[in-house]
Length: 99
Image (tube, rainbow, N blue to C red; front, side, top):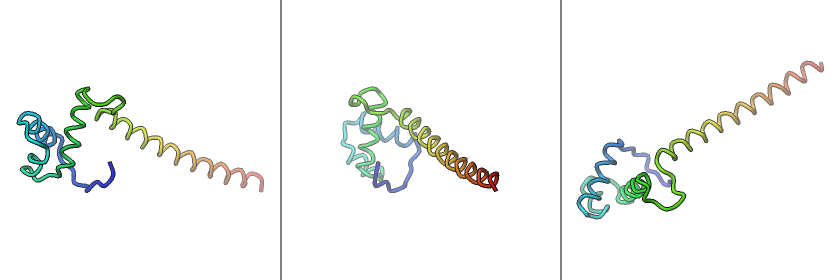
């Protein structure tokens, strides 16, 4: 999601906002105006809620899958950094042994 404003809302708030849209039949823009949130943000929450319920397009990632993917990417990045450190250390010690 590019262009994030950085404002984070609690999961319960998001869930309640999505429920308002779904239960009242009002548009995300109307509910967003009432709650003081971005209409586009609320639309994305509604869309993600549908995906989490198994009603999204084929291949769409659920919230749980998104969290796991982020965790795995972070872990991969950390491991790649560790590999680079170990390569440099190996090269350093190999030079020291040759001296």
